[in-house]
Length: 172
Image 1 (cartoon, helix red, strand yellow):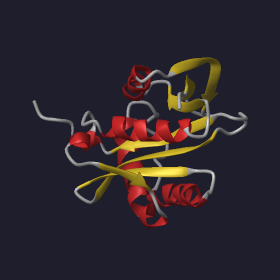
Image 2 (cartoon, helix red, strand yellow):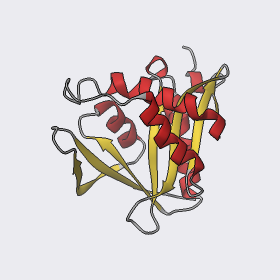
Image 3 (cartoon, rainbow, N blue to C red):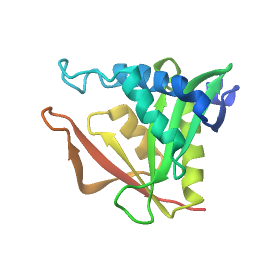
Image 4 (cartoon, rainbow, N blue to C red):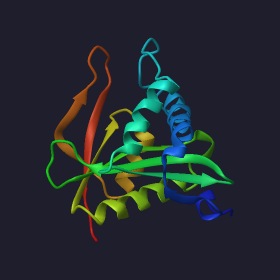
């Protein structure tokens, strides 16, 4: 049995502005295949430029911490932690993405664990949003102690896509 890639050399570190193109590329190359059966075929896919703009904001925001997973010097995964919007004293996990070639390797779990530790250093509770039909991600979060927050859903206007809110208590 081989060990997951995350245990064979993936390195998790804080992202910097120098990682901008790499994190936007990972984001794009992850969500396009992951969301293919979730978003309608005619829904516009994000562009690299749009994602770079969002990541630039995240990498520059002092209240946000971004992480990357590197394997052989290549960025293959991302995660961001920050205070939750509109929920005082709660942290949020965002943008946990791993390139599809590395799904099931342990890299997502390693990023998750680093992100949760970072949140636990600042908050006693954390939340995240996930697409309702993204069963792969939902299963991962549920195995790690996240639970659905009843009545916390977000519907995307004009398309039949819904996000659900997950939460978990954090232990320092």
